[in-house]
Length: 295
Image 1 (cartoon, rainbow, N blue to C red):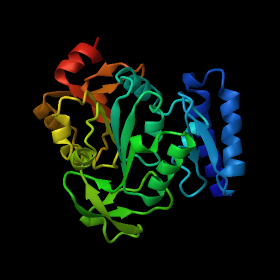
Image 2 (image 1 turned 90 degrees about the vertical axis):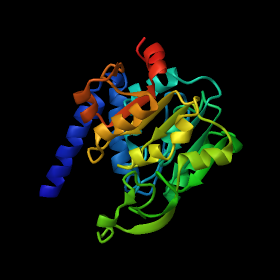
Image 3 (image 1 turned 30 degrees about the vertical axis):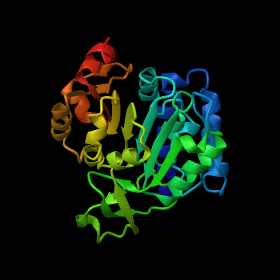
Image 4 (image 1 turned 135 degrees about the horizontal axis):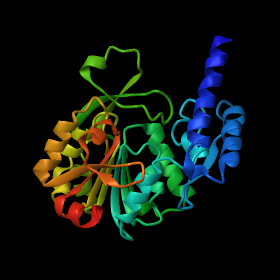
């Protein structure tokens, strides 16, 4: 009874915050509420997948438990990194090539796929990579333009331990030496770098996104050659509390880049306290930041 009560309260909090209160859902709240209920009652634990649609009309599958969190929130709200995606789209040109490191099932790429000419998608999860390939076929995208790599991504090549929490779980991550004796299931996977994979492809990107669960600085350190190529004009990365913001600022400062966040209206801000608490951060070359980002 206590568990049921807690679950009910959790659902009500989610509905209030993510379905009802978000202004982006205006005019669609009843539709999203219906989908929220339908997903949880008839799909999530019933071995049925759900087809979501992004703002650009492309699609992705959301699979049931245990890897339902890969795209699940898209079922009941428009606001899944909405302002971040809108900002990125405004800084892409038709035909641009991008990098999605820690891509999971590729949803952040599919939200841009109507603009770009191709992508490098990297993830260490086998189930996630299988789903990336499935979504490429689903959206009838040219497979030769989307380079899919089943590896971890970091500062240097090697072999690491990666968690295996089931399916394409978005919490899978590189496991450090101090965590090896935990109860989390582990697999050994090859680690690569963005620079190494870009060299293999021979196509330089204009945008790089990293989301590697606390290893983003390492992944960016493995992309220095690409970042210095002069073609990359925007990077989005995840800043976890386990990663020092000062080290991130130092890294990009050494490249002559500016680090910033987007406020609640989607405007760029360099306010340190805002960046410190914001999980999603951006970086751009100093000149591009002054001429294009802040205008």
